[in-house]
Length: 545
Image (cartoon, rainbow, N blue to C red; front, side, top):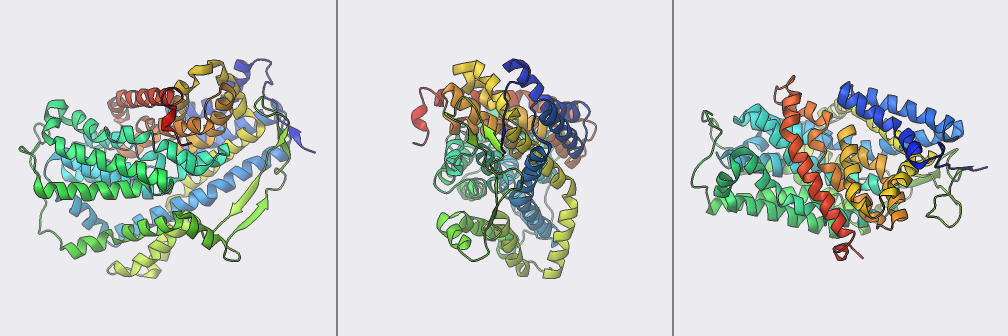
Protein backbone atom coordinates (compact mmCIF):
# COMPACT_ATOMS: atom_id res chain seq x y z
CA UNK A 1 0.00 0.00 0.00
CA UNK A 2 1.36 3.41 -1.00
CA UNK A 3 2.30 6.00 1.59
CA UNK A 4 0.88 9.52 1.05
CA UNK A 5 3.19 12.52 1.38
CA UNK A 6 2.53 15.17 4.03
CA UNK A 7 3.63 18.76 3.41
CA UNK A 8 2.70 20.65 6.58
CA UNK A 9 3.63 18.42 9.53
CA UNK A 10 4.26 21.41 11.86
CA UNK A 11 0.91 23.12 11.27
CA UNK A 12 2.35 26.08 9.36
CA UNK A 13 4.10 26.42 6.00
CA UNK A 14 7.00 28.49 7.33
CA UNK A 15 7.64 26.34 10.41
CA UNK A 16 7.41 23.14 8.38
CA UNK A 17 9.87 24.56 5.84
CA UNK A 18 12.33 25.53 8.57
CA UNK A 19 12.25 22.00 10.00
CA UNK A 20 12.63 20.54 6.50
CA UNK A 21 15.68 22.76 6.04
CA UNK A 22 17.50 21.34 9.08
CA UNK A 23 19.60 18.89 6.99
CA UNK A 24 20.66 21.78 4.72
CA UNK A 25 21.41 24.00 7.71
CA UNK A 26 23.58 21.23 9.08
CA UNK A 27 25.47 21.14 5.76
CA UNK A 28 26.07 24.89 6.01
CA UNK A 29 27.26 24.60 9.62
CA UNK A 30 29.56 21.67 8.98
CA UNK A 31 31.06 23.09 5.80
CA UNK A 32 31.15 26.84 6.41
CA UNK A 33 31.62 26.98 10.19
CA UNK A 34 33.22 23.72 11.22
CA UNK A 35 35.01 23.32 7.85
CA UNK A 36 34.37 19.61 8.05
CA UNK A 37 35.20 17.24 5.23
CA UNK A 38 32.46 16.83 2.66
CA UNK A 39 31.66 13.20 3.45
CA UNK A 40 31.30 13.98 7.18
CA UNK A 41 28.96 16.88 6.46
CA UNK A 42 26.94 14.80 4.00
CA UNK A 43 26.68 11.89 6.46
CA UNK A 44 25.28 14.14 9.19
CA UNK A 45 22.78 15.71 6.79
CA UNK A 46 21.63 12.25 5.64
CA UNK A 47 21.15 11.08 9.22
CA UNK A 48 19.12 14.17 10.13
CA UNK A 49 16.99 13.89 6.98
CA UNK A 50 16.33 10.21 7.67
CA UNK A 51 15.20 10.91 11.23
CA UNK A 52 12.97 13.80 10.11
CA UNK A 53 11.47 11.73 7.30
CA UNK A 54 10.51 9.00 9.76
CA UNK A 55 9.39 10.91 12.83
CA UNK A 56 8.11 14.23 11.46
CA UNK A 57 6.92 13.45 7.92
CA UNK A 58 5.82 9.93 8.90
CA UNK A 59 7.56 8.08 6.08
CA UNK A 60 7.82 4.30 6.52
CA UNK A 61 11.31 3.04 7.37
CA UNK A 62 11.58 0.74 4.36
CA UNK A 63 10.39 3.41 1.93
CA UNK A 64 12.82 5.97 3.37
CA UNK A 65 15.73 3.54 3.09
CA UNK A 66 14.77 2.68 -0.49
CA UNK A 67 14.64 6.37 -1.43
CA UNK A 68 18.07 6.89 0.09
CA UNK A 69 19.65 3.96 -1.74
CA UNK A 70 17.89 4.89 -5.00
CA UNK A 71 19.50 8.33 -4.91
CA UNK A 72 22.89 6.88 -3.98
CA UNK A 73 22.64 4.47 -6.92
CA UNK A 74 21.95 7.34 -9.29
CA UNK A 75 24.98 9.07 -7.80
CA UNK A 76 27.13 6.06 -8.61
CA UNK A 77 25.74 5.73 -12.13
CA UNK A 78 25.86 7.74 -14.29
CA UNK A 79 27.31 10.65 -12.27
CA UNK A 80 30.33 9.11 -10.55
CA UNK A 81 30.99 6.98 -13.64
CA UNK A 82 31.58 10.20 -15.58
CA UNK A 83 33.73 11.75 -12.84
CA UNK A 84 35.98 8.69 -12.56
CA UNK A 85 36.58 8.32 -16.29
CA UNK A 86 37.13 12.05 -16.86
CA UNK A 87 39.68 12.38 -14.05
CA UNK A 88 41.29 9.13 -15.24
CA UNK A 89 41.98 10.62 -18.69
CA UNK A 90 43.52 13.70 -17.07
CA UNK A 91 45.65 11.56 -14.75
CA UNK A 92 46.97 9.56 -17.72
CA UNK A 93 48.07 12.73 -19.50
CA UNK A 94 49.92 13.79 -16.35
CA UNK A 95 51.57 10.40 -15.78
CA UNK A 96 52.66 10.14 -19.41
CA UNK A 97 54.16 13.64 -19.31
CA UNK A 98 51.90 14.88 -22.12
CA UNK A 99 50.20 17.39 -19.86
CA UNK A 100 53.44 19.35 -19.62
CA UNK A 101 53.25 19.98 -23.37
CA UNK A 102 49.65 21.14 -22.97
CA UNK A 103 50.71 23.65 -20.32
CA UNK A 104 53.72 24.74 -22.35
CA UNK A 105 51.66 25.28 -25.52
CA UNK A 106 49.33 27.62 -23.64
CA UNK A 107 52.04 29.48 -21.76
CA UNK A 108 54.06 30.25 -24.91
CA UNK A 109 51.20 32.03 -26.65
CA UNK A 110 51.73 35.31 -24.77
CA UNK A 111 53.72 36.96 -21.97
CA UNK A 112 50.88 39.32 -21.04
CA UNK A 113 49.31 38.36 -17.71
CA UNK A 114 45.84 39.47 -18.84
CA UNK A 115 45.91 37.24 -21.90
CA UNK A 116 47.38 34.35 -19.92
CA UNK A 117 44.46 34.63 -17.49
CA UNK A 118 41.96 34.52 -20.37
CA UNK A 119 43.71 31.57 -22.00
CA UNK A 120 44.30 29.46 -18.91
CA UNK A 121 41.81 30.46 -16.21
CA UNK A 122 38.89 31.11 -18.59
CA UNK A 123 39.32 29.02 -21.76
CA UNK A 124 41.45 26.08 -20.61
CA UNK A 125 39.72 26.03 -17.21
CA UNK A 126 36.40 25.74 -19.02
CA UNK A 127 37.74 22.80 -20.99
CA UNK A 128 38.80 20.99 -17.82
CA UNK A 129 35.45 21.88 -16.22
CA UNK A 130 33.69 20.34 -19.19
CA UNK A 131 35.65 17.10 -19.04
CA UNK A 132 36.15 16.64 -15.30
CA UNK A 133 34.55 19.33 -13.14
CA UNK A 134 34.23 18.84 -9.38
CA UNK A 135 37.13 21.14 -8.42
CA UNK A 136 39.58 19.82 -11.01
CA UNK A 137 39.76 22.98 -13.20
CA UNK A 138 40.53 25.33 -10.30
CA UNK A 139 43.25 23.03 -9.00
CA UNK A 140 44.88 22.69 -12.42
CA UNK A 141 44.62 26.27 -13.68
CA UNK A 142 45.58 27.91 -10.38
CA UNK A 143 48.71 25.77 -10.21
CA UNK A 144 49.50 26.60 -13.84
CA UNK A 145 49.19 30.35 -13.23
CA UNK A 146 51.45 30.19 -10.19
CA UNK A 147 53.92 28.20 -12.27
CA UNK A 148 53.84 31.00 -14.83
CA UNK A 149 54.64 33.59 -12.15
CA UNK A 150 51.25 34.86 -10.99
CA UNK A 151 50.89 35.97 -7.40
CA UNK A 152 49.23 33.11 -5.52
CA UNK A 153 46.22 35.11 -4.26
CA UNK A 154 45.47 36.47 -7.72
CA UNK A 155 46.05 33.08 -9.33
CA UNK A 156 43.56 31.45 -6.97
CA UNK A 157 41.02 34.29 -7.06
CA UNK A 158 41.07 34.71 -10.84
CA UNK A 159 40.60 30.98 -11.41
CA UNK A 160 37.66 30.89 -9.01
CA UNK A 161 36.00 33.85 -10.75
CA UNK A 162 36.65 32.36 -14.19
CA UNK A 163 35.16 29.04 -13.09
CA UNK A 164 31.59 30.38 -13.17
CA UNK A 165 29.89 30.34 -16.57
CA UNK A 166 31.10 26.83 -17.51
CA UNK A 167 30.05 25.17 -14.24
CA UNK A 168 26.44 24.38 -15.24
CA UNK A 169 27.69 22.27 -18.16
CA UNK A 170 30.64 20.79 -16.26
CA UNK A 171 31.65 17.12 -16.18
CA UNK A 172 29.94 16.39 -19.50
CA UNK A 173 26.77 18.24 -18.49
CA UNK A 174 26.10 16.36 -15.26
CA UNK A 175 24.55 19.34 -13.36
CA UNK A 176 21.90 19.79 -16.07
CA UNK A 177 21.31 16.04 -16.34
CA UNK A 178 20.81 15.73 -12.59
CA UNK A 179 18.59 18.82 -12.41
CA UNK A 180 16.33 17.43 -15.12
CA UNK A 181 16.33 13.97 -13.57
CA UNK A 182 15.33 14.96 -10.03
CA UNK A 183 12.70 17.44 -11.26
CA UNK A 184 11.26 15.12 -13.89
CA UNK A 185 11.70 17.67 -16.68
CA UNK A 186 13.11 17.37 -20.18
CA UNK A 187 16.91 17.48 -20.17
CA UNK A 188 17.14 19.27 -23.51
CA UNK A 189 14.68 22.00 -22.51
CA UNK A 190 16.60 22.77 -19.32
CA UNK A 191 19.86 22.83 -21.31
CA UNK A 192 18.34 25.28 -23.80
CA UNK A 193 17.21 27.69 -21.08
CA UNK A 194 20.55 27.61 -19.27
CA UNK A 195 22.07 28.23 -22.68
CA UNK A 196 19.96 31.38 -22.94
CA UNK A 197 21.11 32.68 -19.57
CA UNK A 198 24.79 31.91 -19.03
CA UNK A 199 26.07 33.27 -22.37
CA UNK A 200 25.17 36.76 -21.08
CA UNK A 201 27.52 36.11 -18.18
CA UNK A 202 30.12 34.28 -20.26
CA UNK A 203 30.60 37.21 -22.59
CA UNK A 204 31.45 39.41 -19.59
CA UNK A 205 33.85 37.10 -17.77
CA UNK A 206 37.02 37.89 -19.82
CA UNK A 207 36.46 41.62 -19.22
CA UNK A 208 35.66 40.92 -15.57
CA UNK A 209 38.94 39.04 -15.09
CA UNK A 210 41.02 41.79 -16.67
CA UNK A 211 39.33 44.50 -14.62
CA UNK A 212 40.01 42.56 -11.42
CA UNK A 213 43.67 42.27 -12.35
CA UNK A 214 44.49 45.74 -13.66
CA UNK A 215 41.40 47.98 -13.68
CA UNK A 216 39.09 49.02 -16.51
CA UNK A 217 41.53 51.39 -18.27
CA UNK A 218 44.31 48.84 -18.58
CA UNK A 219 41.77 46.16 -19.52
CA UNK A 220 40.83 48.23 -22.56
CA UNK A 221 44.37 47.71 -23.87
CA UNK A 222 43.45 44.10 -24.63
CA UNK A 223 39.88 44.81 -25.76
CA UNK A 224 40.25 42.82 -29.02
CA UNK A 225 41.17 39.70 -27.05
CA UNK A 226 38.36 40.30 -24.55
CA UNK A 227 35.80 40.60 -27.35
CA UNK A 228 37.07 37.57 -29.28
CA UNK A 229 37.18 35.35 -26.17
CA UNK A 230 33.79 36.48 -24.87
CA UNK A 231 31.96 36.22 -28.18
CA UNK A 232 33.59 32.91 -29.16
CA UNK A 233 32.77 31.29 -25.83
CA UNK A 234 29.27 32.71 -25.35
CA UNK A 235 28.26 32.04 -28.95
CA UNK A 236 29.50 28.44 -28.85
CA UNK A 237 27.88 27.89 -25.47
CA UNK A 238 24.52 29.04 -26.85
CA UNK A 239 24.74 26.92 -29.99
CA UNK A 240 25.79 23.64 -28.38
CA UNK A 241 23.46 23.92 -25.38
CA UNK A 242 20.48 24.67 -27.62
CA UNK A 243 21.12 22.37 -30.57
CA UNK A 244 23.13 19.46 -29.12
CA UNK A 245 22.45 19.21 -25.41
CA UNK A 246 24.23 19.67 -22.08
CA UNK A 247 27.23 17.41 -22.66
CA UNK A 248 29.45 19.48 -24.97
CA UNK A 249 28.96 23.26 -24.42
CA UNK A 250 32.02 23.63 -22.17
CA UNK A 251 34.36 21.43 -24.19
CA UNK A 252 33.54 22.90 -27.57
CA UNK A 253 33.26 26.51 -26.33
CA UNK A 254 36.69 26.23 -24.73
CA UNK A 255 38.30 24.70 -27.81
CA UNK A 256 36.72 27.28 -30.13
CA UNK A 257 37.81 30.10 -27.81
CA UNK A 258 41.40 28.84 -27.67
CA UNK A 259 41.54 28.52 -31.47
CA UNK A 260 40.03 32.00 -31.92
CA UNK A 261 42.57 33.51 -29.52
CA UNK A 262 45.49 31.77 -31.23
CA UNK A 263 44.35 33.11 -34.60
CA UNK A 264 43.91 36.60 -33.12
CA UNK A 265 47.45 36.64 -31.73
CA UNK A 266 48.81 35.89 -35.18
CA UNK A 267 47.59 39.29 -36.40
CA UNK A 268 47.41 41.35 -33.17
CA UNK A 269 49.53 41.91 -30.08
CA UNK A 270 48.92 44.25 -27.11
CA UNK A 271 50.87 47.48 -27.34
CA UNK A 272 52.25 46.95 -23.84
CA UNK A 273 52.92 43.73 -21.95
CA UNK A 274 51.26 43.98 -18.55
CA UNK A 275 52.53 42.29 -15.40
CA UNK A 276 51.72 42.64 -11.72
CA UNK A 277 53.38 45.52 -9.91
CA UNK A 278 56.80 44.58 -8.63
CA UNK A 279 56.75 41.27 -10.47
CA UNK A 280 59.95 40.00 -11.99
CA UNK A 281 59.79 38.82 -15.57
CA UNK A 282 59.68 35.05 -15.92
CA UNK A 283 60.64 33.32 -19.12
CA UNK A 284 59.93 29.84 -20.39
CA UNK A 285 63.13 27.93 -20.87
CA UNK A 286 64.02 25.79 -23.84
CA UNK A 287 62.79 25.64 -27.40
CA UNK A 288 59.12 25.32 -28.15
CA UNK A 289 57.98 21.73 -28.74
CA UNK A 290 57.21 20.76 -32.32
CA UNK A 291 53.67 21.27 -33.58
CA UNK A 292 53.19 17.52 -33.90
CA UNK A 293 54.16 17.03 -30.27
CA UNK A 294 51.62 19.63 -29.12
CA UNK A 295 48.86 18.04 -31.21
CA UNK A 296 49.78 14.62 -29.80
CA UNK A 297 49.56 15.98 -26.26
CA UNK A 298 46.09 17.39 -26.91
CA UNK A 299 44.95 14.26 -28.75
CA UNK A 300 43.35 12.50 -25.72
CA UNK A 301 41.06 15.49 -25.22
CA UNK A 302 40.39 15.82 -28.95
CA UNK A 303 39.36 12.15 -29.06
CA UNK A 304 37.30 12.66 -25.90
CA UNK A 305 35.45 15.60 -27.46
CA UNK A 306 34.67 13.58 -30.59
CA UNK A 307 33.43 10.57 -28.60
CA UNK A 308 31.26 12.67 -26.29
CA UNK A 309 29.84 14.48 -29.31
CA UNK A 310 28.84 11.17 -30.90
CA UNK A 311 27.38 9.84 -27.65
CA UNK A 312 25.35 13.04 -27.33
CA UNK A 313 23.60 12.57 -30.68
CA UNK A 314 20.11 11.10 -30.11
CA UNK A 315 20.40 8.86 -33.19
CA UNK A 316 23.72 7.40 -32.05
CA UNK A 317 22.50 6.98 -28.47
CA UNK A 318 19.37 5.17 -29.70
CA UNK A 319 21.53 2.89 -31.83
CA UNK A 320 23.67 1.96 -28.82
CA UNK A 321 20.62 1.41 -26.65
CA UNK A 322 19.15 -0.94 -29.28
CA UNK A 323 22.04 -3.38 -28.81
CA UNK A 324 20.83 -6.38 -26.75
CA UNK A 325 21.84 -6.05 -23.10
CA UNK A 326 22.92 -2.40 -23.46
CA UNK A 327 20.03 -1.11 -21.33
CA UNK A 328 18.64 -2.61 -18.15
CA UNK A 329 15.63 -1.08 -16.44
CA UNK A 330 13.97 -2.18 -13.24
CA UNK A 331 11.58 -0.76 -10.68
CA UNK A 332 13.47 0.21 -7.52
CA UNK A 333 12.48 -2.26 -4.77
CA UNK A 334 10.25 -0.84 -2.06
CA UNK A 335 9.90 2.57 -3.71
CA UNK A 336 8.38 2.48 -7.19
CA UNK A 337 4.70 3.37 -6.83
CA UNK A 338 4.96 3.32 -3.03
CA UNK A 339 4.72 7.11 -2.56
CA UNK A 340 1.72 9.25 -3.49
CA UNK A 341 2.00 12.98 -4.17
CA UNK A 342 -0.88 15.25 -3.11
CA UNK A 343 0.58 18.64 -4.02
CA UNK A 344 -1.90 21.42 -4.82
CA UNK A 345 -0.59 21.38 -8.40
CA UNK A 346 -1.94 17.88 -9.09
CA UNK A 347 -5.65 17.28 -9.63
CA UNK A 348 -5.52 13.87 -7.96
CA UNK A 349 -3.10 11.76 -6.00
CA UNK A 350 -0.32 10.46 -8.26
CA UNK A 351 2.17 7.67 -7.64
CA UNK A 352 5.83 8.64 -7.51
CA UNK A 353 7.74 6.42 -9.96
CA UNK A 354 11.19 5.01 -9.18
CA UNK A 355 12.69 3.19 -12.16
CA UNK A 356 16.47 2.78 -12.37
CA UNK A 357 18.00 2.74 -15.86
CA UNK A 358 21.43 1.14 -16.31
CA UNK A 359 22.37 2.20 -19.86
CA UNK A 360 25.99 1.20 -19.49
CA UNK A 361 26.91 1.49 -23.17
CA UNK A 362 25.29 4.84 -24.04
CA UNK A 363 26.36 6.53 -20.78
CA UNK A 364 28.68 9.52 -21.10
CA UNK A 365 31.27 7.89 -18.84
CA UNK A 366 31.55 4.97 -21.25
CA UNK A 367 32.33 7.37 -24.10
CA UNK A 368 35.15 8.86 -22.01
CA UNK A 369 36.43 5.39 -21.06
CA UNK A 370 36.64 4.33 -24.70
CA UNK A 371 38.28 7.65 -25.63
CA UNK A 372 40.91 7.09 -22.95
CA UNK A 373 41.83 3.64 -24.23
CA UNK A 374 41.93 4.87 -27.84
CA UNK A 375 44.38 7.60 -26.75
CA UNK A 376 46.78 5.28 -24.91
CA UNK A 377 48.84 4.26 -27.99
CA UNK A 378 49.46 7.95 -28.76
CA UNK A 379 51.10 8.56 -25.35
CA UNK A 380 54.86 7.84 -25.63
CA UNK A 381 56.04 5.27 -23.10
CA UNK A 382 52.53 4.59 -21.87
CA UNK A 383 50.75 1.24 -22.07
CA UNK A 384 47.35 -0.30 -21.50
CA UNK A 385 48.67 -1.89 -18.33
CA UNK A 386 49.65 1.49 -16.98
CA UNK A 387 46.25 2.85 -18.01
CA UNK A 388 44.45 0.12 -16.06
CA UNK A 389 46.64 0.75 -13.00
CA UNK A 390 45.96 4.47 -13.35
CA UNK A 391 42.23 3.72 -13.40
CA UNK A 392 42.52 1.89 -10.09
CA UNK A 393 44.51 4.75 -8.55
CA UNK A 394 41.94 7.23 -9.82
CA UNK A 395 39.14 5.37 -8.05
CA UNK A 396 41.19 5.39 -4.84
CA UNK A 397 41.96 9.09 -5.32
CA UNK A 398 38.24 9.86 -5.67
CA UNK A 399 37.04 7.57 -2.87
CA UNK A 400 35.85 10.43 -0.66
CA UNK A 401 34.23 12.47 -3.48
CA UNK A 402 32.49 9.24 -4.57
CA UNK A 403 31.15 8.73 -1.06
CA UNK A 404 30.12 12.38 -0.77
CA UNK A 405 28.30 12.48 -4.11
CA UNK A 406 26.47 9.23 -3.36
CA UNK A 407 25.30 10.57 0.01
CA UNK A 408 24.30 13.97 -1.39
CA UNK A 409 22.20 12.30 -4.09
CA UNK A 410 20.74 9.96 -1.49
CA UNK A 411 19.86 12.98 0.63
CA UNK A 412 18.24 14.71 -2.34
CA UNK A 413 16.08 11.72 -3.25
CA UNK A 414 15.10 11.13 0.37
CA UNK A 415 14.01 14.76 0.71
CA UNK A 416 12.09 14.54 -2.57
CA UNK A 417 10.27 11.26 -1.86
CA UNK A 418 9.52 12.18 1.75
CA UNK A 419 7.95 15.48 0.65
CA UNK A 420 10.49 17.64 2.51
CA UNK A 421 11.64 19.39 -0.69
CA UNK A 422 8.00 20.11 -1.59
CA UNK A 423 7.44 21.46 1.93
CA UNK A 424 10.17 24.05 1.39
CA UNK A 425 8.84 24.76 -2.08
CA UNK A 426 5.34 25.43 -0.75
CA UNK A 427 6.81 27.96 1.70
CA UNK A 428 8.48 29.76 -1.19
CA UNK A 429 5.11 30.09 -2.89
CA UNK A 430 4.51 32.83 -0.34
CA UNK A 431 6.86 34.99 -2.41
CA UNK A 432 4.34 34.77 -5.25
CA UNK A 433 5.30 36.67 -8.36
CA UNK A 434 8.71 37.50 -6.85
CA UNK A 435 9.81 33.87 -6.80
CA UNK A 436 11.81 34.23 -10.07
CA UNK A 437 14.08 36.60 -8.13
CA UNK A 438 14.70 33.99 -5.43
CA UNK A 439 15.04 30.99 -7.71
CA UNK A 440 18.73 31.60 -8.65
CA UNK A 441 19.56 32.43 -5.03
CA UNK A 442 18.53 28.91 -4.02
CA UNK A 443 21.01 27.51 -6.54
CA UNK A 444 23.69 29.90 -5.28
CA UNK A 445 23.05 28.78 -1.70
CA UNK A 446 23.13 25.12 -2.70
CA UNK A 447 26.51 25.41 -4.40
CA UNK A 448 27.91 27.46 -1.52
CA UNK A 449 26.86 24.69 0.86
CA UNK A 450 27.87 21.67 -1.20
CA UNK A 451 30.58 23.01 -3.51
CA UNK A 452 28.86 21.41 -6.49
CA UNK A 453 26.25 22.60 -8.98
CA UNK A 454 25.33 18.94 -9.39
CA UNK A 455 24.63 18.53 -5.68
CA UNK A 456 22.75 21.83 -5.55
CA UNK A 457 20.52 20.72 -8.41
CA UNK A 458 19.94 17.39 -6.72
CA UNK A 459 18.89 19.14 -3.52
CA UNK A 460 16.73 21.93 -4.88
CA UNK A 461 15.47 21.21 -8.40
CA UNK A 462 12.55 19.12 -7.22
CA UNK A 463 11.53 21.99 -4.96
CA UNK A 464 12.10 24.51 -7.74
CA UNK A 465 9.65 22.71 -9.99
CA UNK A 466 7.03 22.36 -7.24
CA UNK A 467 7.22 26.03 -6.33
CA UNK A 468 7.22 27.26 -9.91
CA UNK A 469 4.10 25.30 -10.78
CA UNK A 470 2.25 26.77 -7.80
CA UNK A 471 3.21 30.42 -8.45
CA UNK A 472 2.68 30.18 -12.22
CA UNK A 473 6.34 30.30 -13.28
CA UNK A 474 7.66 28.06 -16.05
CA UNK A 475 9.15 25.11 -14.07
CA UNK A 476 11.83 24.63 -16.73
CA UNK A 477 12.99 28.21 -16.11
CA UNK A 478 13.06 27.64 -12.35
CA UNK A 479 15.17 24.48 -12.66
CA UNK A 480 17.50 26.19 -15.16
CA UNK A 481 17.82 29.21 -12.85
CA UNK A 482 18.87 26.91 -10.01
CA UNK A 483 21.79 25.74 -12.12
CA UNK A 484 22.62 29.19 -13.54
CA UNK A 485 22.47 30.81 -10.11
CA UNK A 486 24.52 28.01 -8.65
CA UNK A 487 27.54 28.73 -10.84
CA UNK A 488 28.07 32.07 -9.09
CA UNK A 489 28.29 30.36 -5.69
CA UNK A 490 31.16 28.12 -6.74
CA UNK A 491 33.81 30.79 -6.13
CA UNK A 492 32.89 31.22 -2.45
CA UNK A 493 32.20 27.58 -1.66
CA UNK A 494 34.45 26.37 1.19
CA UNK A 495 35.41 23.33 -0.89
CA UNK A 496 36.41 25.39 -3.92
CA UNK A 497 38.41 27.80 -1.78
CA UNK A 498 40.16 24.89 -0.09
CA UNK A 499 41.10 23.41 -3.47
CA UNK A 500 42.39 26.78 -4.70
CA UNK A 501 44.49 27.47 -1.59
CA UNK A 502 45.97 23.98 -1.69
CA UNK A 503 46.92 24.39 -5.37
CA UNK A 504 48.59 27.76 -4.79
CA UNK A 505 50.22 27.06 -1.41
CA UNK A 506 47.88 29.50 0.33
CA UNK A 507 46.61 27.15 3.03
CA UNK A 508 45.72 29.29 6.04
CA UNK A 509 44.64 32.24 3.88
CA UNK A 510 41.17 30.95 3.07
CA UNK A 511 39.60 34.06 4.63
CA UNK A 512 41.60 36.33 2.32
CA UNK A 513 40.48 34.38 -0.72
CA UNK A 514 36.86 34.36 0.45
CA UNK A 515 36.91 38.16 0.76
CA UNK A 516 38.59 38.38 -2.66
CA UNK A 517 35.71 36.55 -4.36
CA UNK A 518 32.64 37.41 -2.25
CA UNK A 519 31.75 40.69 -3.94
CA UNK A 520 32.10 39.17 -7.41
CA UNK A 521 29.89 36.25 -6.40
CA UNK A 522 27.12 38.54 -5.13
CA UNK A 523 27.27 40.78 -8.21
CA UNK A 524 27.04 37.86 -10.63
CA UNK A 525 24.20 36.31 -8.63
CA UNK A 526 22.17 39.52 -8.77
CA UNK A 527 22.75 39.61 -12.53
CA UNK A 528 21.29 36.10 -12.93
CA UNK A 529 18.40 36.98 -10.59
CA UNK A 530 17.47 40.02 -12.69
CA UNK A 531 17.71 38.05 -15.93
CA UNK A 532 15.55 35.22 -14.58
CA UNK A 533 12.91 37.67 -13.35
CA UNK A 534 12.80 39.33 -16.77
CA UNK A 535 12.64 35.99 -18.58
CA UNK A 536 9.70 35.01 -16.40
CA UNK A 537 7.93 38.17 -17.53
CA UNK A 538 8.64 40.64 -20.30
CA UNK A 539 11.45 38.52 -21.82
CA UNK A 540 9.50 35.25 -21.78
CA UNK A 541 9.88 35.13 -25.55
CA UNK A 542 13.55 34.24 -25.02
CA UNK A 543 12.61 30.80 -23.69
CA UNK A 544 12.15 27.77 -25.95
CA UNK A 545 8.55 27.09 -26.86
